Structure formats: C-alpha cells, structure tokens
Image (cartoon, one colour):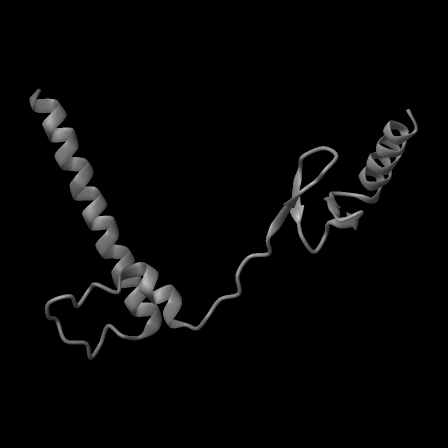
Length: 105
C-alpha cells in the first residue's frame, strides 16, 4: 500500500514540475518573464495562453468522408460529384457507376 501511495505522489510531483517547466518556457518565448509581477493568478495564462498570444492561428481544414470507401480526406483535396464527397476521381466514377446499375434494375 505504501508503494502505491509513493507512486501516486511521484506522478503528481513530476506532472507539477513538467507544467511549471512548460510555463517557464512559454514565458521565455513570449518575453514576458522579465518584468512580470508575481501575484495571484500570475501563472494562470500557462502554456495554452502563450500559444494564443502570438495571434490567431488558422483553423485546420475540415475533413470529409468518402461516400465510396469511408476514408476521411481534407475538404480541399476531395472530389465533389452529385453533392457527395469522394477521396479520388476513381471512387466518384465507381460510385456513379454503381448507383446507375441500381437505377436500371
């Protein structure tokens, strides 16, 4: 039982130290570490806040699902046919041929 408690204590201690190191690195990158006052909530910005301080980053491109095989592809790279998205032109043609075969039966 004592060993389990010791492992839990070590885990929390290392996670706390890692978080403090990330905060210090983020402050050093943004140049805020030198003239900053220490007070309540001084480290509240943390690692995530430093990423947003540099300006707005563009959002990742949305992914769409191929109607033929189910693979997800970036919307900009996807082929649009018949109002559906496909990962390649070959899959768009295969899907169109399959739906045409169903319509003739």
